Image (cartoon, rainbow, N blue to C red; front, side, top):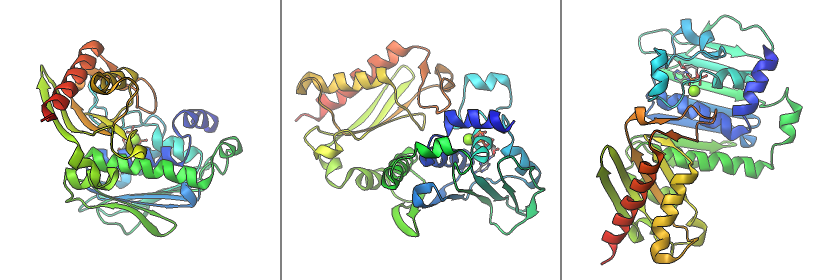
Length: 323
Ligand code: ADP
Ligand code: MG
């Protein structure tokens, strides 16, 4: 069992940022509108994620840590149309296999409880705790029992930047999310729940971006693309800042990236990059994220159509923007 968890963990939990990603996805799935992330030593000593989501009932606390247990799939048919960010029921079990995990959760009107897990040890019974509605998960000493993984961690600054990048991406994922990151007791990123898209964009891309960028808002046959497309002339370090969200999930897809590059290169020549923030929306049944444990890759039912739509939608937005 322990070995199986570590093998599964090897796929999903690669570095501190992978833990943060899984915990943030869980918080969003729980409907949280405020999330506070505290890390120490770039997440290797501590990762604590606190949310104001729906919480977990005391009876389900132990279950949440069990491998292959998820509360998010009601029927096998659900796998074909996943709406939540998580669905494999592997993340918490994988994290608990390679770190010390403490889970504290409360639901409104129900007594909050906590449970602490040590790799390889029997789970204790949940104990009563003080916690408002929502969930706090603490992950300490990541990979303390997996020296091989620990060895592959990069310098603290590198691991920290991975986490910061992730937090920035999540702050763009929802327009109503308050998100805070502290590192070693110091707040390093903060966006309030009331911040609108332009404020979020300014925080992540810098103040100058929006002024030189154009709005994208195109819909065609069930596909919708909105967001902001920048000019390649903006600050060089920003040129690669590209975010593509599919139904609220940050994705990386070679074919779609190709479509975006193509749309720009008609005017600017090949190989040019521009900062981009795009939200693609389509029916959840038209794509499959159950391809890889990190859920970055997507398989589309009609990949060619999506590619062509993305290309022409962005072309249109860029053309309209020219005076
Ligand atoms: P998955 O997200 O794939 O369901 P996880 O291992 O990430 O699997 O989480 C297991 C279960 O624990 C979830 O299905 C959910 O019921 C519960 N859970 C985890 N984190 C939270 C949270 N922040 N708020 C509420 N429930 C949570
Ligand atoms: Mg999850």
